[in-house]
Image 1: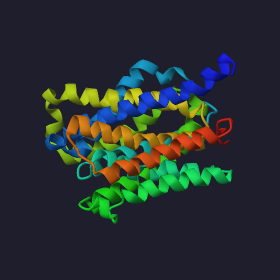
Image 2 (image 1 turned 120 degrees about the horizontal axis):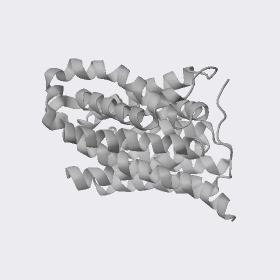
Image 3 (image 1 turned 60 degrees about the vertical axis):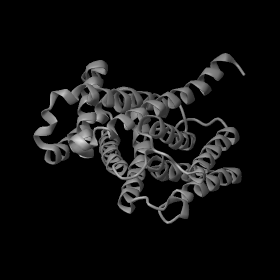
Length: 292
């Protein structure tokens, strides 16, 4: 394989791995702050600080938006905000790794939509088996809060739409789309966070930890994902993201002491196996072109 082709193939995957590790580490840190300002408060500060960081670094105002479609960017920001808010609200009552696995229904739906070969459905079926083992109706998942599970699934819907609209926004605006998208997300979620947490958000002693959450869970991973979105087909991107439950489970175990059963780990392993299988069986494809 030529070196340039190897880099073009491996680099987006490596970028996604770093992004997933970062975002789940940030999620563990965020969960530790929930007792102080609640999930909506943490989400609001994460998006607000993340937006400020990306605006300062990328300075998207230097890029002209004239003649570029703004609808994908708007929906990218809205779905990004909804995904973050509902996921953090789910993590309040559901272990991190399981919440991420339930949230994966969104990327899984994207992978299914873009599948073309019979072998792809085999890998997706394997991912579904792992996912079903983690649902609240499963014997191995007794004790999982139904409301938290529903919120995680709703976050998955936003995640799937985030992939679609994020890729289109990235094709139009490149990395600048990440700064503009997270700014839109912050505008949507900050009022909710303020209404929920109130004056507790003014506690400056929380800001170093909140800044860490913003960098690990927003500024860094969304920039990396925007890079990957424009270099990978939506099907491959969506299925590769199935590795994220493992990162979530490991992060929850290491940082929060969240223990999972053996069968739950096997379920997450099935999702990872589906991801690897889909990657190995996929052919090189161009990334989706933004809609007119």
